[in-house]
Amino acid sequence: MRGMPHRLRTPKPPARSSPLRFLPGLVLLSALLAGCGGGGRISRPEEFGPTTLRIHPTFTRVKDWSGDKKADGVEAVVELLDSFGEPTRGNGTVVFELYYYRKYDPNVLGNRTAGPWRGPLLTREDQDGHWSPALRAYTFQLAGDKIGEGQEYVLTASFETAGGADRPGGGRLYDKLILEPPPNKAVEDRGVGRAKGRRS
Image 1 (cartoon, rainbow, N blue to C red):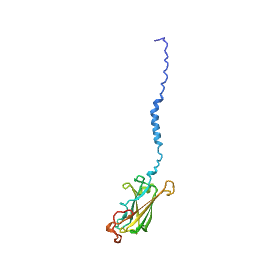
Image 2 (image 1 turned 45 degrees about the vertical axis):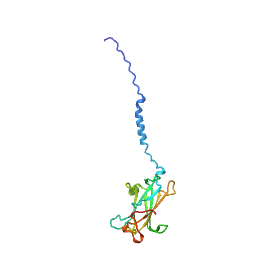
Image 3 (image 1 turned 30 degrees about the horizontal axis):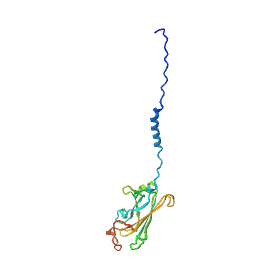
Image 4 (image 1 turned 135 degrees about the vertical axis):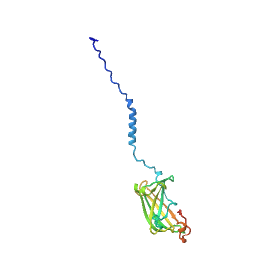
């Protein structure tokens, strides 16, 4: 109404924000930051590293891989096994040597006929080039023009960890396998052979 003084309304104080309303966002942000910072390398316990070297007796043999019906060398399949007997990978170098087999001698290693061959497993390219996911083992083609399919041999392999066996955490593993020719290609004076290799 006219002549009536206007009443002044007291403004309401602004609502205070509760700190708890920001808690879910802070928790989410902390989780994201923790996830981004967790990319450190996980070290492998010693028991999961290689403790045994094994030349695979089934797949290791003298082989023709060029298709000319002549032996090109030895295709060697080697396994690195951990302390549980499970296949694993290793960082190091495998060295192979091939000897004639002395059948009736306590020391079966005769004269060396080929090698040594060095198979490095030091880089990602080395690993990808030799690792077989199906076999869970490493495959190497050891070429030699003096290797024949009708001969008996002893193949030796040693694995030395990167940096040397004397380095802390390093070591050297060894194995050997007698390679016998298929029965239809065995040399007569060498006796009866078998298609698969065997231990000495």
